[in-house]
Length: 177
Image 1 (cartoon, rainbow, N blue to C red):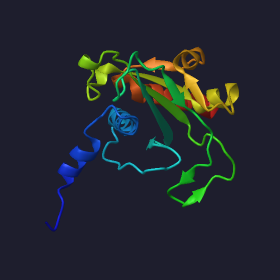
Image 2: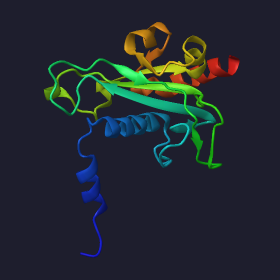
Image 3: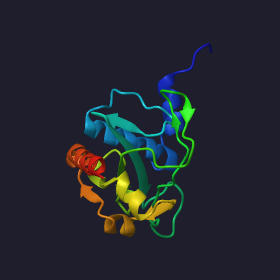
């Protein structure tokens, strides 16, 4: 054998869409498709996940059902830790920990029953959009946020087809902040 098959590798490495890392990448892809930018390739470890019309977007994901055996659905928690992000365009790191993006999209794979879950079915996802300024103002150093507190902060719930509008509305709030 002199060459491996890319499709076989992808099926071997990423077939389980419920694993935390793969689900996170899938959530980024779902948001990218909603924004109409799925042709833009993903940059691993960049300081934000997506950019559209000058708006920077950070995508976070969580799910009730995990790939491992569970006695009950998972508690929903999203990571929001300020970091010294790396900028892929300049190959530099931020000098202090901060949330370096503009808008957050929290993606919840909301199905609670393993037998019905299909991460590729966008109707099974719930999306919550929140300007970074709200996180910075209300919880500047907090590392995680649960679903209840996220909603209490005013995260805008929306469907897949309304994501682009919600992200641009959040950007308008951030630019006015």
